[in-house]
Image (cartoon, rainbow, N blue to C red; front, side):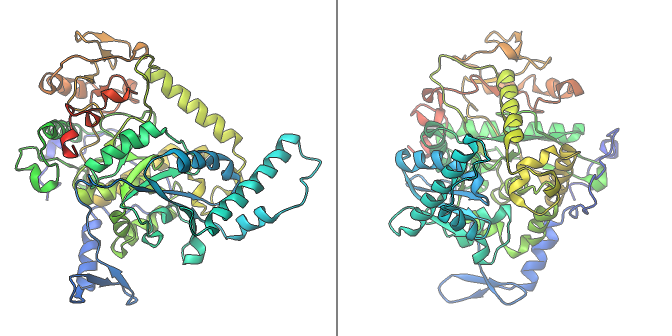
Length: 530
């Protein structure tokens, strides 16, 4: 209905219409609605008399009724860490960070390693007592010995019933090698809060994840919370205008939280801050989006990469619900295995809200690397890492090995394939959430870009973003900042491709803890969990 009501002069305005690049059919536009309707029609609820409703799939197998999590979980003090792996070579990446977390991070009471390969890949490595080949370089021989020790240590922890770590062997639980296994209800985490890291990182600090990130999740336990965001760029002016309104409404709603306002969908309209989702109408209007993988924006991000995210365990039931089988099939058959896009999009539609983000680095407030330079450093480091990764084999790229998604960017047309995936997924839901707001939303540290794409100084003058530095902020109001955002959006061009479509950012990008508003009794969001 929303798509049909769009004026004719706002339809088919794009010069370069979207063209799929793989032979995998796109998900049906608006397909989530018919899928849910079919499930409800074919699977009526049956009550066991204890208010515990149960659904049944086509095979007659029971599936529990999923329940959305609470909007806040202020009294939660413990969390479960879930990491997924499939090869012993990755033990070198995560065993040392894992040990540090288990020994020093408060509240970590459970660790689940989701192992997507046969158990023998671990046991055979741990039990191997043969001397490494003398033909190998010394560094390689030492690495092999270390790998055996890591495998042995991991199994020892698993076999110790008093240790917080356990291994979930996916294949022994009837699952295939699938990136979505880390979200499977069969994991049965004992804590409501789940923290995720990829097996090769990046691994953020305790201050970023627990002191800051976990506290933000407590105040927003009904959404996905993370520190590694990606942006979806709108191409049509209609979507840009709607998206800007959505982010502005989100910022207003966050600022209202300084007065203790509940952000749940039931109260948004009551407080005049309804969070607007942007309709995407590919078939009716020719709308398409671009996947912006050049930056990690504070504002207007739509996808959270899994490493360093928090999620309420209630969402696991939804992610693997039979009604969403079409989505899960798409994840395992598309060449980029877009589980990150799928989880972020699904959860935002379940909650009616965008994800929340926190800074992935906490500084001492003295030195701040510029945003542009840090982005280049990150991309360089990632490129170097991929070149070194011993798991990468060109001839295996087309195999359904979900754990290699990170390496798939080396494929020809990888960016276009990710773009195809995000258009397919967002079209399936028919709308896109308003976009994230930065940690600084509603505070003096929220800044805006100038029309030339550079940052503004405290007097409103344009300055080159590459020379920005950390420090304090001014008492800029939200209303004064949004007054020029419309003209910023309309001036979008190909030269600013790396910029998100909303002109806000946080300064400094990586703040000291005393700048984090929900960590201070004067700050935005603090009163949600005082």
